[in-house]
Image (tube, rainbow, N blue to C red):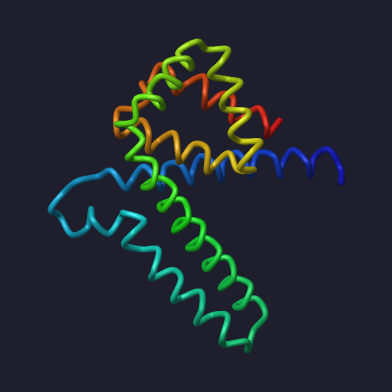
Length: 157
């Protein structure tokens, strides 16, 4: 692999992580408007999964099957991220967990925690998704989230 190809792959991975985080942040949008509710990942993920399955099952064209695999993989990714993000909302009320998060107000410890979390779960997108869920419940302040996010990106270097 040449340096030019490697740079393209790394840039694509970072852009993909950013887009995944933005899509997950759409979960917090509250509105009675039907178009706004369709932007939530819980609304369009099942549709993408069904389209992907139909494309995979119609193996007339290998490009169509590959596109179906991409759509199905994205749907599974969004479903898994949604489940992980939803499961951490109860941690806000656990005093021991809040005490641990107070330690991460130190930027150095926050960067180390982000790098460790990403190394353990092997996904910077999942780390950022969990952090978004914690920040939306108020368990993590935005000031302490910045060093943790920086730590999640060190694994990509």
